[in-house]
Length: 214
Image (cartoon, rainbow, N blue to C red; front, side, top):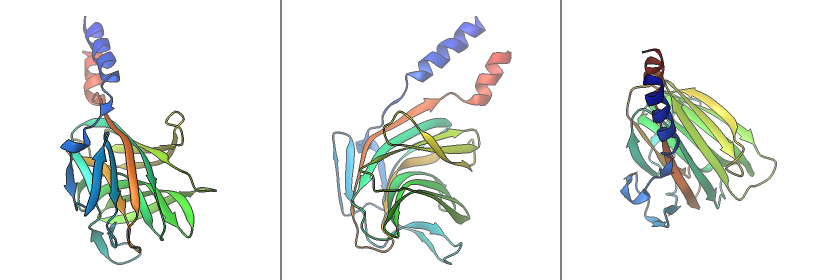
């Protein structure tokens, strides 16, 4: 009976992926120009904004647009992103954020004339890793999977084959703000678009393991 119950839970969980209603999400640093249509967000990213803490550059900024919903537990989130990137460090993507000292952002970042798959992990201080692309891309899918105390970040160009770009620590058993962000540290802003944003609940691994044994 317990095995049947557990199997039923797992099957149900596999069908819980759905588009998150963007209209019900909240703004942190709302931009002046934005629009939600057919559950896609278009915005003009606010100029001179970013998320970064201390390391290398010596300053802290926490002022870029971020549309988010609050989630507990484990989940998978993904979004299709595109942008009219123009200036050094123009960027758009996903962000998972506990507070101003603990967050992960991942997506496309325009640096030295090239498109880069970029991840910034911040725990009091920020670090930055990139995968440089050979040519500009019209869009990219970014996916984050939160499991226990880790977040795995993936990218895809077709929403079918995903490649890992980062595995990072993030405190577990703590609510997290999850959503879409854009930043423009150097420029005068740019247009960014976010499509097919969705969140899938994942059953807690510790609970699943307990159910399996009991």
